[in-house]
Length: 103
Image 1 (cartoon, rainbow, N blue to C red):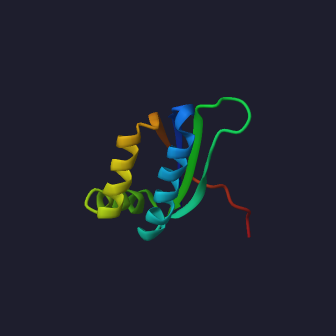
Image 2: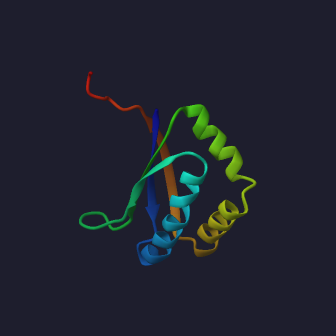
Image 3: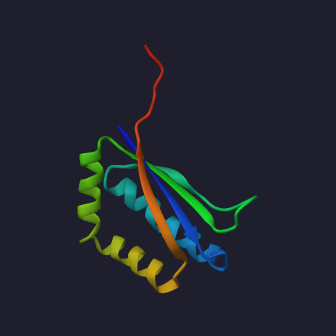
């Protein structure tokens, strides 16, 4: 299992646009076999940092999702919305593996 952590720097004047973008991606990650753990918008502190967490069975499954997203019309619509609204300034991706309780 691998969880992708995405840290976004967003335009604080376009939080509602970013929220729309986020809501577009949640079902798309799930469509391709992932589990979306949510997007997190600024509340207190920095007003331009947002986060996303989603989990796939493996890094290979995540890579499959990434490849499929390039040809999926709904994914292309989400990519285009993000580009047109210019709500994302930059982002970085990291991958984590969970530590689970012993049986």
